[in-house]
Length: 229
Image (cartoon, rainbow, N blue to C red):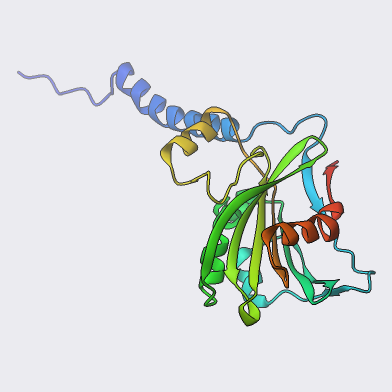
């Protein structure tokens, strides 16, 4: 007579059933821990810009709802700075302090040739980067010349600052979609939370040297670094 097969599972099978979900949960916890390094004890150093609203030559402007929806920023400053003799600067400044929610691409994408091109402006020349040293940090501005009003050139200087990435033109030198960039981000436990974009349009100057000179005089003195508590 054949004996009835046992309905009890072997200990090794039970162990496998329990071990599999435990391994999955443990790996998820490990990935989360690795991608969320502890906050630095001394606090995070972030770039900050203060718009000189009380100056007579400054005109603040509200942010359009469409831009607010597209960029999902945390704070912003927009307006115009009159520099005399028909020269003026269009200023657009945006802050992100929760990149985990919006993603890094929202700050790194949209180079001036793309943004201005969508508005019908043609690129005349891609210029050399402009560097500005601030408290030991090197800020790199992307520089582009467009055709402006009445045949005068329009110069666009755009700074993209991301926590942990400095000394580079982030619009041209970094591609966040590259596998190498993603791998290095994981290996180095790089998890930025803060980003800044400062885009300046200079009207009424005859050369990029004159345009950058206005930026150095009218805008850059209001850039600072501060420590978050």
